[in-house]
Image (cartoon, rainbow, N blue to C red; front, side):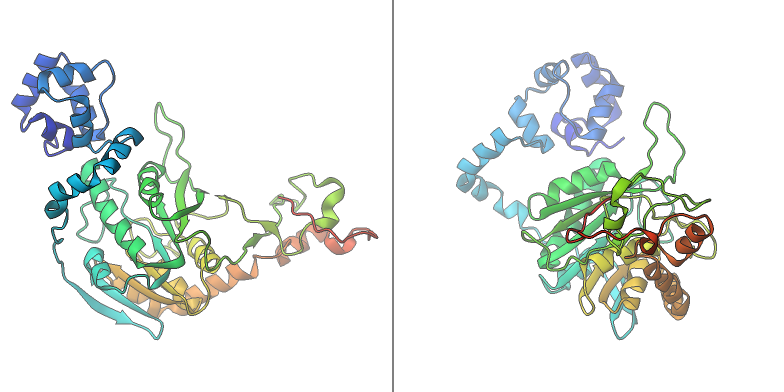
Length: 402
């Protein structure tokens, strides 16, 4: 039980005996009080008066202690900002702890460090990064090869998250882009931080079914990929297009394009904000560590879309090093750090030819309406191809269809 969480701290509850006593006085069950404490949410309108009565706090004071600030409170804080600054300035200027990090690997394009990403980011040049991709631990009590604690309280996890997100924002160039990969639950909080500093571009849903259905919940079948930029528009947006979706068996059309087949863009279909074609990394041939590893296809798409050759890519959570491998192969400069062992990442660079072939295959099959394999199966089964369609006299307008 996290007695250091904000609610119990606000109510002066430091142990289970005090918790049981407060539950008895307020008429609210221990289980429900624990729920409010763990989730960090304001108690319901039924329970709130009971809690305020026993604690002697006002609703406003409890909201401030919980960090719940609505627009009414925010406006009041703005009107009295001068007085508030004098009260809290010393408390918020406390220097964060320094943790060690060291350089462990270099190429002509990038540098890999081992250690704490917060300390590295403190020493990096502000507004120097073109593209940031972050895949932090999900706080699921998973076993990582690193010393990372992946079972923090919700409050601890969100406080740590805010630290690294704010440091990433400082590092991003004007017009630079940041992508953050996480569970939808956590990315709702991260989006709330980013909304105060950056411009929202997309919430990308990546359809990957890693987990089994959970009782009394919808089947969790997607990961959230946030996409934000510093400033009103990105410096770089390289359009990415996909081949037409066809039947895997006969090569026939899945969607009805009616009389508009000849107006489909020959470079493929527009990429949407729902990605169905990113496979989980399960096969031993592609998987290089025990914990989950990001798909090379995902990183190839993000880096190709939001950066150009020579740009600087930063990933504060190295993991198995997929970001760095893809950045290297795509001729981007890169900076990376991993808190745990880095041997796996370095080994991947020693076998970079294998990864080059994977990326070459990915790039061979994008930005075209039909791949070579698709053309063959459609020919075999008598399905239309652009060159087999009847010619039309008026083709000035190119129609974009999904």
